[in-house]
Length: 199
Image (cartoon, rainbow, N blue to C red; front, side, top):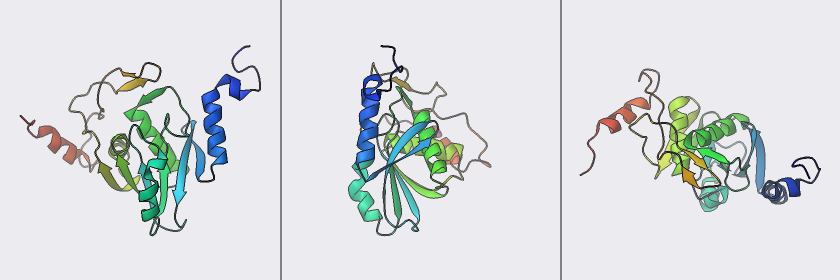
């Protein structure tokens, strides 16, 4: 049978079918089309409260934030996102810090969350600071936990091959510097880049 010819999604891409059905059956999971893919997310708190967006690390998903989200929901509307290739979002087969940054950007725009506080752990922190560097006005406050520091080089972005689980290059990539007058994050990145390396 030719792939995609039938109306049997469970045969064409069983993983995508299972994720879609699981998201549909779980009342706590919502999804949004953002940047051409389906991103799953969870929500807690009063819709009129100030928004907080939680972004997970490399081996996590939105459910890893449940306990923290429940605490924050007392005073905030809390969104926890599943990046592509994680949890119940689409698994595209191509992943990089820049693509995760783009997922976060598309999610914030799709949910009209400009100015939200973003809390990122590890990979989520890297995606968040890359987005804050590119679009400083989009994120109101940024909290980063255990994220890798920006790379000091201008090597190409790290891209992972989902089948091989390997990296074409290592570490995050920062775009070429922009003038500090237009980018409030750049002075901190430059100061870090000039700091001496530990022995």
